[in-house]
Length: 149
View 1 (tube, one colour):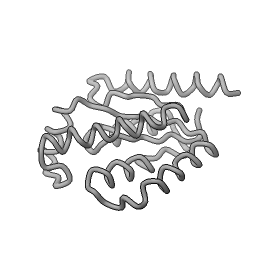
View 2: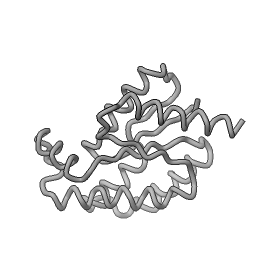
View 3: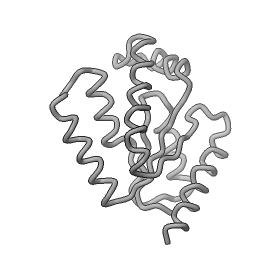
């Protein structure tokens, strides 16, 4: 199994649910992170914060990938599902449909950037059969690990 799995995706995409269930189901004891560099890049861009740090964060992300070779799980749900979850949660991060679309678009841009540098698994954060989605993710991680040994 991979030593580092990073679960990324916008708020309300389902990443925390998948990460926590994955860790319990497979007894994952290494490093399983709910967010890291990517969310910092995305939210800084969408909220127009810390633009001066963008290049440094991309550099740090590239170094992290080169040193640790993590698996990134990009958790996605349909835009309308994410928006409905934001409204239900009562969060003030995203206040409009356009905010959500912009947020998801920025995640896609960052994942496009890193896709040539590391291995990414796309996961369905809206899956009605979470156990099957977790088995699929675990199978991909195991297959990938076996090809690296």
